[in-house]
Length: 131
Image (cartoon, rainbow, N blue to C red; front, top):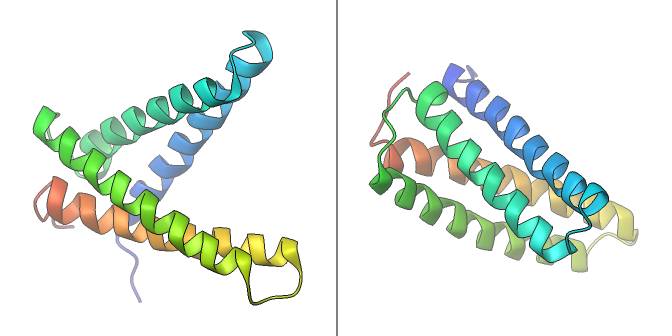
Protein backbone atom coordinates (compact mmCIF):
# COMPACT_ATOMS: atom_id res chain seq x y z
CA UNK A 1 0.00 0.00 0.00
CA UNK A 2 1.49 3.31 -1.12
CA UNK A 3 1.24 6.24 1.27
CA UNK A 4 0.61 9.55 -0.44
CA UNK A 5 3.42 12.10 -0.26
CA UNK A 6 0.78 14.70 0.60
CA UNK A 7 -0.31 12.58 3.55
CA UNK A 8 3.29 12.40 4.81
CA UNK A 9 3.61 16.20 4.52
CA UNK A 10 0.24 16.55 6.26
CA UNK A 11 1.48 14.39 9.15
CA UNK A 12 4.66 16.46 9.42
CA UNK A 13 2.52 19.60 9.60
CA UNK A 14 0.43 17.94 12.29
CA UNK A 15 3.51 17.22 14.38
CA UNK A 16 4.67 20.83 13.97
CA UNK A 17 1.20 22.19 14.82
CA UNK A 18 0.99 19.97 17.89
CA UNK A 19 4.48 21.07 18.96
CA UNK A 20 3.60 24.75 18.52
CA UNK A 21 0.40 24.21 20.52
CA UNK A 22 2.17 22.55 23.47
CA UNK A 23 5.29 24.71 23.51
CA UNK A 24 3.28 27.93 23.43
CA UNK A 25 0.96 26.52 26.13
CA UNK A 26 3.91 25.68 28.37
CA UNK A 27 5.55 29.08 27.80
CA UNK A 28 2.34 30.93 28.66
CA UNK A 29 1.72 29.04 31.91
CA UNK A 30 5.38 28.80 32.99
CA UNK A 31 6.85 32.17 32.10
CA UNK A 32 3.81 34.45 31.91
CA UNK A 33 1.53 32.87 34.52
CA UNK A 34 -1.48 32.85 32.20
CA UNK A 35 -4.34 30.66 33.44
CA UNK A 36 -4.44 27.07 32.03
CA UNK A 37 -7.71 27.34 30.08
CA UNK A 38 -6.84 30.68 28.51
CA UNK A 39 -3.35 29.40 27.66
CA UNK A 40 -4.80 26.27 26.07
CA UNK A 41 -7.31 28.26 24.03
CA UNK A 42 -4.59 30.59 22.72
CA UNK A 43 -2.14 27.74 22.06
CA UNK A 44 -4.81 25.70 20.25
CA UNK A 45 -5.66 28.69 18.05
CA UNK A 46 -1.96 29.21 17.26
CA UNK A 47 -1.64 25.53 16.31
CA UNK A 48 -4.77 25.70 14.17
CA UNK A 49 -3.62 28.84 12.33
CA UNK A 50 -0.25 27.22 11.70
CA UNK A 51 -1.91 24.01 10.48
CA UNK A 52 -4.03 25.98 8.01
CA UNK A 53 -1.03 27.91 6.72
CA UNK A 54 1.17 24.81 6.49
CA UNK A 55 -1.46 22.71 4.73
CA UNK A 56 -2.36 25.53 2.34
CA UNK A 57 1.21 26.27 1.36
CA UNK A 58 3.07 22.97 1.65
CA UNK A 59 0.66 20.03 1.67
CA UNK A 60 -1.80 21.16 -1.01
CA UNK A 61 0.05 24.18 -2.46
CA UNK A 62 -2.99 26.44 -2.51
CA UNK A 63 -3.49 30.16 -1.96
CA UNK A 64 -4.74 31.40 1.39
CA UNK A 65 -8.42 32.39 1.16
CA UNK A 66 -10.68 33.24 4.08
CA UNK A 67 -13.45 30.92 2.79
CA UNK A 68 -10.99 28.03 2.91
CA UNK A 69 -10.09 28.97 6.47
CA UNK A 70 -13.78 28.77 7.49
CA UNK A 71 -14.06 25.37 5.77
CA UNK A 72 -10.87 24.28 7.53
CA UNK A 73 -12.29 25.31 10.91
CA UNK A 74 -15.50 23.38 10.24
CA UNK A 75 -13.50 20.22 9.45
CA UNK A 76 -11.38 20.64 12.59
CA UNK A 77 -14.46 21.27 14.74
CA UNK A 78 -16.25 18.19 13.38
CA UNK A 79 -13.19 15.97 13.81
CA UNK A 80 -12.71 17.30 17.35
CA UNK A 81 -16.22 16.12 18.25
CA UNK A 82 -15.57 12.70 16.70
CA UNK A 83 -12.20 12.53 18.49
CA UNK A 84 -13.81 13.22 21.86
CA UNK A 85 -16.62 10.71 21.26
CA UNK A 86 -14.21 7.94 20.22
CA UNK A 87 -11.83 8.70 23.08
CA UNK A 88 -14.61 8.66 25.66
CA UNK A 89 -15.88 5.30 24.39
CA UNK A 90 -12.48 3.60 24.41
CA UNK A 91 -11.17 5.15 27.63
CA UNK A 92 -14.27 4.41 29.71
CA UNK A 93 -14.68 0.67 29.10
CA UNK A 94 -13.17 -2.48 27.73
CA UNK A 95 -9.62 -3.04 28.87
CA UNK A 96 -9.11 -3.47 32.64
CA UNK A 97 -6.00 -1.23 32.84
CA UNK A 98 -6.86 2.50 32.93
CA UNK A 99 -3.56 3.62 31.38
CA UNK A 100 -3.97 1.14 28.52
CA UNK A 101 -7.57 2.28 27.95
CA UNK A 102 -6.43 5.91 27.81
CA UNK A 103 -3.53 5.08 25.47
CA UNK A 104 -5.74 3.03 23.14
CA UNK A 105 -8.44 5.71 23.24
CA UNK A 106 -5.93 8.41 22.31
CA UNK A 107 -4.38 6.28 19.58
CA UNK A 108 -7.66 5.31 17.93
CA UNK A 109 -9.30 8.73 18.35
CA UNK A 110 -6.25 10.57 16.99
CA UNK A 111 -5.92 8.18 14.03
CA UNK A 112 -9.60 8.65 13.18
CA UNK A 113 -9.56 12.43 13.51
CA UNK A 114 -6.27 12.84 11.61
CA UNK A 115 -7.69 10.74 8.74
CA UNK A 116 -10.90 12.77 8.78
CA UNK A 117 -8.91 16.01 8.80
CA UNK A 118 -6.75 14.91 5.87
CA UNK A 119 -9.61 13.82 3.63
CA UNK A 120 -11.84 16.70 4.69
CA UNK A 121 -9.11 19.23 3.98
CA UNK A 122 -8.17 17.55 0.72
CA UNK A 123 -11.67 17.18 -0.73
CA UNK A 124 -13.72 19.88 1.03
CA UNK A 125 -11.32 22.72 1.83
CA UNK A 126 -9.01 22.44 -1.18
CA UNK A 127 -11.46 20.77 -3.56
CA UNK A 128 -9.95 17.44 -4.50
CA UNK A 129 -6.25 18.16 -4.72
CA UNK A 130 -4.49 15.31 -6.47
CA UNK A 131 -1.06 13.82 -5.79
